Structure formats: structure tokens, C-alpha cells
Amino acid sequence: MPRVARAVPLQLLADITYDQVEVAVDKAENLWAAAMDARQKADELSEQAEVASTDFADQAGDTATKMDASEKFSLSMLGDARVAMEKSGDVQQLLADAVEAAEKAEAAEQEAEAALQASEKLLEAFEAAEGEDDEE
Image (cartoon, rainbow, N blue to C red):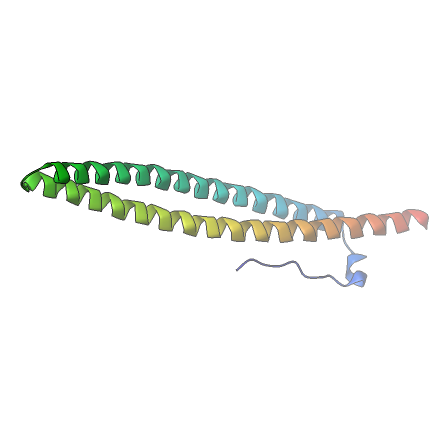
């Protein structure tokens, strides 16, 4: 489950250091990099599933055409049907993997966005505190 940035009491924000801001920004950047990697993996799995689905449809269509055109059933037709069924299982697994990867990517993006928002709030608080120090 993605972590959600929580509101930080204003009195705590006044004590923010540059190092804390830098750590928060680095964390957000690292989470976004991981989210982008997760999204790329999900996209690759989706593309693989699409190719496998096309291969399965071609195999199944060829097998059906051979069966329809033949006057009698042969063992090679059974083998072709088995290959088509195996490809169907491969497609189903790839689709399941792609869906799971997409869900993980979505969660990673939400976590990265929350970290980005938290780092922006810390930066704003730091800049505001620095501005107050300059005025004194």
C-alpha cells in the first residue's frame, strides 16, 4: 500500500534543515526513478502479451482452418491444437503478469507523488524559515 504524505505541524517545519530537504528531494527522485522503471516493465509485459496474443490467434486460426478443411482427423491436428492451447496459457500468464506489474507501477507512482509533495512542502517551509532568518 502506498505511503501518503502527512501534514507536518508548522512549528516543526520551522526547524527544517537544508540536509533534511535534500534527503526528502533525493527520496522523491529515487521513488520516481523506481516508478518509471516499474511502468516500463509493465509496458514491456503488455507488449509481450499483445505479441503472444497475436501468435495465439494466428495458431488457433490456422489449426481451425486445417480441421475445417480436412475430411478426417489426424494426430498432427491434435498436436497443432495442443500447441494453440499452450500458447493460450502463455498469453493468460503474460496478461496476469502485465496487470500485476501495472498495479505495482501505479502504487509506486502514488508513493513517488506523495514523496514529491512532501519534499515540496519541506522546501517551501525551509525557504520560508530562511526568509524569516534573513529579515531578523
